[in-house]
Length: 409
Ligand SMILES: Cc1cc2nc3c(=O)[nH]c(=O)nc-3n(C[C@H](O)[C@H](O)[C@H](O)COP(=O)(O)OP(=O)(O)OC[C@H]3O[C@@H](n4cnc5c(N)ncnc54)[C@H](O)[C@@H]3O)c2cc1C
Image 1 (cartoon, rainbow, N blue to C red):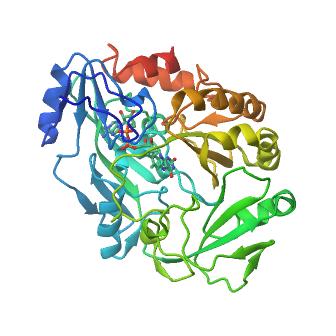
Image 2: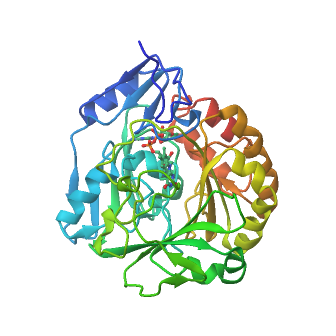
C-alpha cells in the first residue's frame, strides 16, 4: 500500500489506518475505544502536527451540515467541510465569511485548528470567526463550548489536541463583492516609507516577492471600492492576469483586473476549480507584531540571497489581534512573513533556522501548521492554560503525539 502522506508529500504519516466515520455517534464510538488517535483534516499542514502512531480519523465523510442561524449571523457546519464548498453555499444564501486563506481547498476545522489566516489589517484570522465548537473529547463525550465560556479561547485554534471537532458555528455577514488588482515592481523605498498606507489600501493586501532584489515583485489588492490609478507607490498595474510566482499559469488564480466578483472568488488567490492534488513546495511562516513590520522585512533583506536560493515566493500579509490562546496573533496586530520554499527539506531547513534567529528578536511566532525548528515555542503567554485544558479534556494523552509533546512539554 502507498504510504499516506500530507498534501505536500514531505510527511508520510505513521498511522496504522485511517478511520472514516459517517456519523457523530460513530465518531464517539471510535474515539472512546481507540487507544491513540489524531484527526486528519485535508492534510495541508507541512509538519507532523496531524501525525500519530495510532489511528487517523478523517471526518470528510460526515453528513454535510450548513445550518444558517435564525438571525442569519452564524452558520453551523460539520467538522469535515472545506471552505470552497461552504463559501459557495453561503454566497448562494446571500451570506459571507469575513476572510479566506490563499486557497479554498482546506477543511474549515483543520484551518481553524492552526489559526489559518488571510490578509487585512482589520481582519482576524479564520479562527476568530468561530463562535462555537462541538467536539468529541477523549472519553467519547460530546462537549460544546461557545464564545464567552471559560476555556473557549483555548478550544478553537487547538491543534486537534482537545478532541475531534464534529461541528463549528461561524460568524457570517451579508455577502459582498471585491475587486482584485495586481501591481508590479514596488520599489523598496516605498516599502520603507509607505508600508502602513500600502497594507491598509484594501480589504486584503498581500505583497509577493522572490527576494531576488530588495524591490517587491507584486502587490495584490482586494478592494471593495474600485481603484483607478495605474500606479501604486511606484508599482505599476499589471497588463494581464498574474500568478504570484512569475511564469506559473495565471488561469489557476482568481480573477484580477478590478473585475467585481463575490468575496469567495476574490479573497483566495487560487480558484476552487483548480485542484492542486499535491504540491511541489514546502512552507514556513512567522508572525511578528505589526509595529516591527518594517524592521522585520529589513532583517530578511539582509539574507535575501540565501533565502532566494531556496524560495519559490514569499508573501507578506497582515492579521488583526485576537484573544485565542494559541493564535500567533494573540493580543497583537501582526505582519505575517510567509515563505513558499522549493520541495527540498535538507536545503530549506538551514535557511528556516537563519530566519528564526533573525526574526526571534521581534517576537516572531511560527505558523504551527508549517515548518519551523524552534521548540518549545516561546511567546505564547497562555500556553500553560492551554496545556491545563488539554489535560482536562484528554488526561491520558490519547490525542497527543510527538509534535504536541514537544510543544506542551
Ligand atoms: C497550498 C497551501 C496553501 C496554504 N495557505 C494558507 C494560508 O493562506 N494561510 C494560512 O494561515 N495557512 C495556509 N496554509 C496552511 C494550512 O491552512 C494549515 O496547515 C491548515 O491547518 C490546513 O488545514 P487541514 O484541514 O489541511 O488540516 P490538517 O493539516 O489535516 O490538520 C491540521 C491540524 O488540524 C487538526 N484537525 C483537522 N481537522 C480536525 C477536526 N475535525 N477536529 C480536530 N482537529 C482537527 C489536525 O489534527 C491537525 O492538528 C496553506 C497550506 C497549503 C498546503
